[in-house]
Image: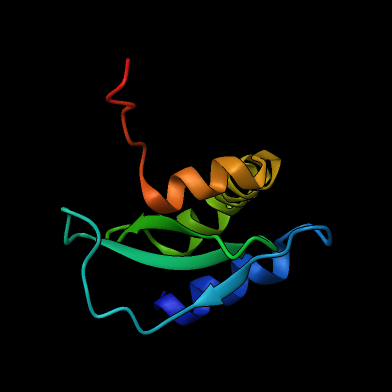
Length: 105
């Protein structure tokens, strides 16, 4: 199963309340394991912070195995989105800038 097909299957099976944008076209391999195909999604907040969420599936899995695992994979992706959206904009700001230690302490 190619990445586009996998991404479309995921999008079509997501809950209606999920607000993730499918992303494509990454040239970098964000995984240390080349034997996994990756599909990417973005979640955004009104404060301007976006989260890059992804799923990895072994290239050795059959279409049948992938289809059987999709509900679990989608649930994990939706939980990642919920975690991002449950953070307030202050936390998102810290994520954008990095956590900087206060040198006055």
